[in-house]
Length: 83
Image 1 (tube, rainbow, N blue to C red):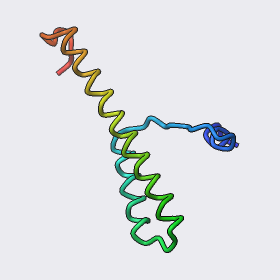
Image 2: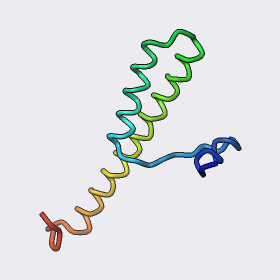
Image 3: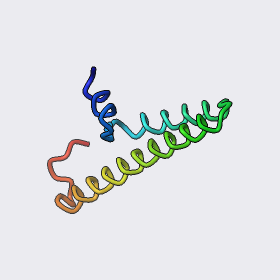
């Protein structure tokens, strides 16, 4: 059993902080599946999946925006940064 599977098996939420593009694509895949879902339960499950991936993508974007802002404040001239 993989670590992520173990975490889910015991009810622990396991967040994978991959790229924003990964989470946006996963949300889009879930939306496509939701359009074809035949049961209310599956549509609700997929809707939660979409919401989760969108929230993680937004959190990653906020964190990267904060990191970019912090680096601009700590090094406003961009000295030593590769262009």
